[in-house]
Image 1 (cartoon, rainbow, N blue to C red):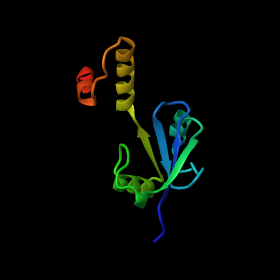
Image 2: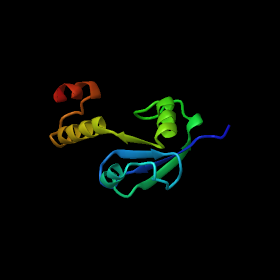
Image 3: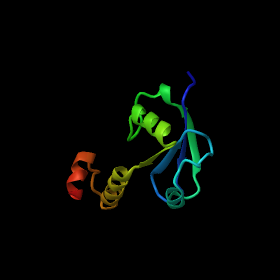
Image 4: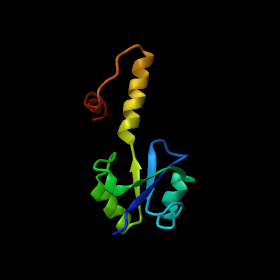
Length: 108
């Protein structure tokens, strides 16, 4: 069995938005509208899926399924952005940062 390689690209238009594809520089699997909104993908890294037991925001099994079924996986880290913006403002005001669980209360 061949090793599943995963190629990761970041969006130049959307902060903390990543596209995982199964072939380097091949985006024919990605819907046109999504690719337009994503912008010209900027290569970040390549990794062997079997060597990772944990991944940010997705399990290795979910990623494998998405790559097999659709040929791509889109990851958007919105929670991180909310955390960073709120804590950046707190730092500007001289306040200590809040933990992720404390921040969730602000957005409900």
